[in-house]
Length: 114
Image (cartoon, rainbow, N blue to C red; front, top):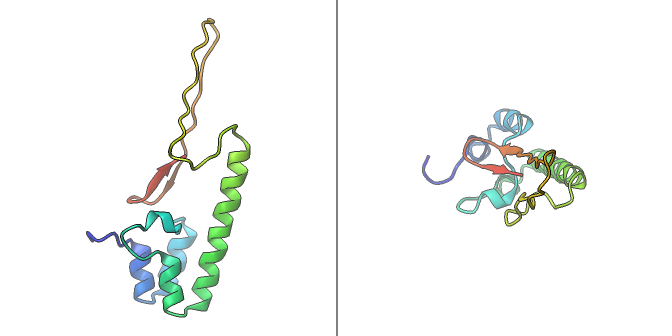
């Protein structure tokens, strides 16, 4: 739409709770840091005093944090820091190799590589 709205934020603005619930369940982005130029989903439902959707979004945000902590525990570096790279110092051995794992999280407009 040109102003940073997503299908989820539009559904929440129009109080289409069933559509918003579906979009949240399929994994659309909820985190505030992805909504720099517009209102984030949690703020929308809080402004509308939509307690059910507020609780649902807060629960999903909590689940995302749990997943990020679990995934980051599998690596030596924290996941989610955009300033960190996965560069590995070269080792001069025939069997030496490096491996990087990219996980894309988000919808079409808001994708982050972890």
